[in-house]
Length: 161
Image (tube, rainbow, N blue to C red; front, side):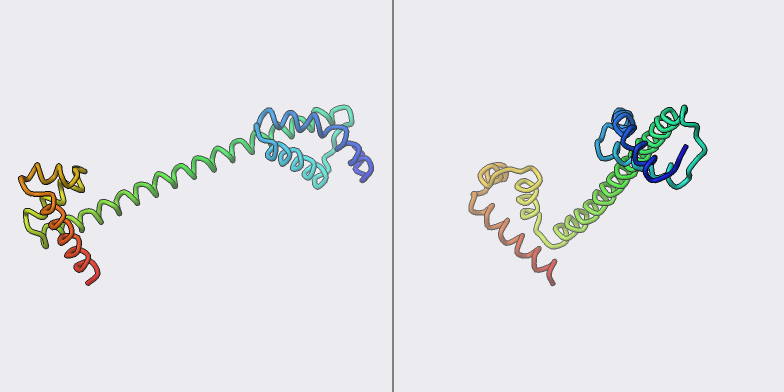
């Protein structure tokens, strides 16, 4: 093969579409397909292998196929690493959340009356309304409000103090 600039440009123009189509069929992404073809031509220009003109198209298509498969493998590895990172991050976040919740439970247990703890548990954990909480405990909704307001104020002071 002749590696003059003019011959190389002709080779590129004559084969680009066919190489791009093959790459796109494999990688299923326009940018990755362009990258695969560009990489093959860059390597061809740098390495300048001794390829017979009769076998040049087959050589190029094989190189594009191999480069495209490499891109697919790399993409798969990248996606696997991203998924692994997200899973590990979620585990870390879950553990951190559990630790914070344990600290909050301890703070509640150490600083609130049994009745205040019951009110908070029904309202926040069981997601009952003030009225439903009041009915469950046999107290008035205003008493529920008072317990919640005073309890949260007390906990804020402990957390900020």
